[in-house]
Amino acid sequence: VSTGDASPAPSDWQATLRSRGHRLTAQRQLVLQAVTELGHATPEDVCSKVRETAQGVNITTVYRNLELLEELGVVRHVHFGHGPSVYGLIGDGEREYLVCESCGKVRAIRPEQLDAAREAIRDAFGYEARFTHFPIHGLCADCAE
Amino acid sequence: VSTGDASPAPSDWQATLRSRGHRLTAQRQLVLQAVTELGHATPEDVCSKVRETAQGVNITTVYRNLELLEELGVVRHVHFGHGPSVYGLIGDGEREYLVCESCGKVRAIRPEQLDAAREAIRDAFGYEARFTHFPIHGLCADCAE
DNA sequence: GTTGGTGCAAAATGTTTGCACGGGG
DNA sequence: CCCCGTGCAAACATTTTGCACCAAC
Image (cartoon, rainbow over all chains, first blue to last red; front, top):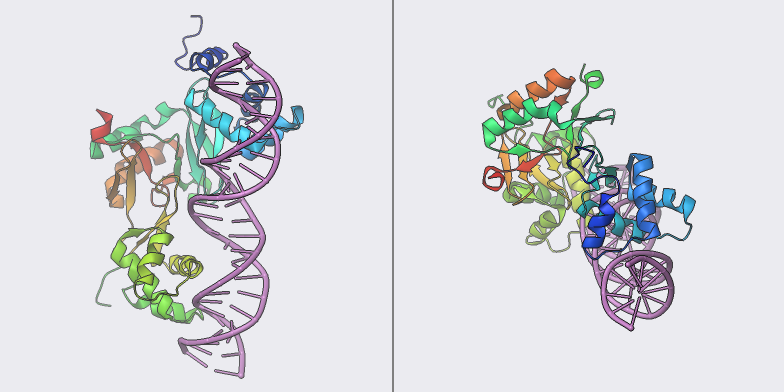
């Protein structure tokens, strides 16, 4: 392979799809394209984006395709607060998140930046912490003053 | 005062309630009693428990009283996963939580047990992390093997 | 031509709101 | 006797499910 990437290559997901007996549909491609272009998006956001290209697409289809793409390891969802899930590309690696409880600002970081914290948690509790699905909540530097 | 407690004393919330123009009702007391007895409970759980004593109580009333008791600093809610919020007493101090993504087990810990992790996060990002509202997710020792 | 995918409607789930009545202070 | 709290119904927001039809392969 030319890329040293651990996650599926940009079009490899289509092969995985097929090997599992799934089909390649326009909606499926549009949902992935929407997530790619939007960066972080709710199912509602994705649906709106998809409809710019294909009018009749139903939100149900968006939910079903986001779920499938997540199973394939192409996208993942995060819970930033009380609202809807937010989907994003995995692409060149996972991200973990810091969310400020006061100003709501979200900061995406690379997992290795949290290794010290993860180690402290592992040492104390034997837990291997992951902040990809539920982010770290707290007060950011600006709000903590 | 006889207790050195930072949070309101066991019956002090009633005074705070009154000072804010609220009233002491049977439902209000029963909701708090239910949370106390259940330890960790969803609004649905609390409602069922309350109905063991007073049949006609509506879940709306439970939601409204949980919200009020939270404003008063008597209870708080946590999000353990995709389901409903879970309420608990604050009583003798806050708790923070570790939730295993694999087996679903929840471990409650005292905030100071996470001080090393909190310090690592503060050093790296200037964030003051709180795991009271959204817990730490990951793999517990048993599931990480 | 199979059988998986889609659209639509409806249900399920968790929570909030509007409103008239009743009870706490 | 005022007005906060309650019960009830309905709305709301997010996600899931059932089913007939359509389209990918």
